[in-house]
Length: 359
Image: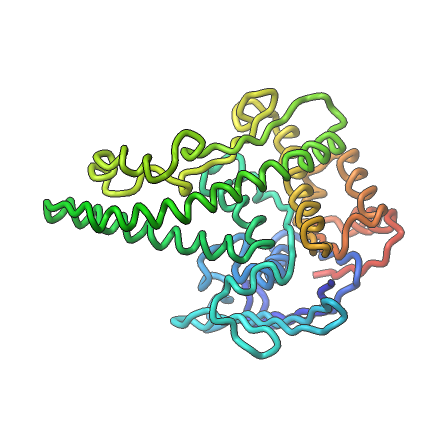
């Protein structure tokens, strides 16, 4: 699978731009603010139906314009596939495959396996649990459409239950029958989501540890720890036990929507006890493990986006990545960098075919 070409119309800072890509390595070079990351984000948009950097879809439209269009051609399983993502102000975003619009964006997730490595990944360490849950859910959803549907349904029921709790508080009433219907639905979806997250982490940890050791060559011990209320009790019991708390808060305080993934170094939170270098290595190992996990499970080499990472890495880590490129671990690569000479030197050392786009 590889991305053959892409056309951008009114996307972020581009009025119109067309790119034809190499099967192996593609580099976007130029000064900061020129739009290198925006091209990578457009490619991400094709895979996930949304931006990696700006969740507000309308803000991806070029300033002063009314719409954006991302139009791309992909070769997959020896077939050409056209993917178009477009948005007009005041309307719903449209995602099409070969001219046919998807009813649900979730049906498209997993069609283009893709992993991005970016300085913005630091949010996984510094932000709240939602960011880390999203990481887990993104990986699992690319391989399991049923999981994504369960997740969507669970969120829907959580919204309904929270609305009911607010209604109770405002009107000084309580209806246990309706509440118990929501509880049972949450228990059913939550149980399945919890099991799949647990299975994912068990399979993912050894891959992550291997990559971390390869990147750092160090003996430091790192841990990924899945934290969930459901390790203690089943969700139905938890919901019943916490009903008074939920009524006081007007929202659901327990469940898989509160799960977290703890990032640790030598049994301490990496956020507090890890140096910048240690945090960087942890995140790159995490993303390379995501890549390998998707590749193993799907049998397809995901597209890999390196956003401005060579600026943030020392030579030994860059050398490790080049080694992986040379061993044919990766499929198609997209790289953004501010230093054209450095980029060219790096990609030449891989002895792979490449294209450099000066923006």
